[in-house]
Image (cartoon, rainbow, N blue to C red; front, side):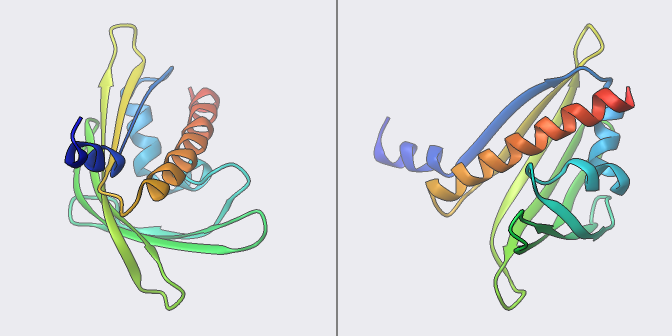
Length: 155
């Protein structure tokens, strides 16, 4: 692997998960606010504010509150929402002045397995640093653990 390929790999995040739930339900948990608010932040975090318009061309703005009470604002735009197959959106954390910072693009695809489960392929790119990518990997992994528990309760 050359230096350029290694740098690109450090700037991307790939997570694959299989959920024991039908694809339509998994997609719904990504596109209905009442579900998103329950799973889409890491363990110990809460979501005191979330709003948006989940459709191609739509937007979102949320606040995640850390266990120590710090608020972390983020926002983005939905580039593509194709039920129940695919969601593509931008993702940017806000600075202390409320301005969006470095923007990444998230692509999520949902494939139904022969046994009725759902394979989710998650890709986020391009991060400004390996440390940012690694932090997002930890946060998304905890969020997907919460999603798995929510799907078990809903199924």
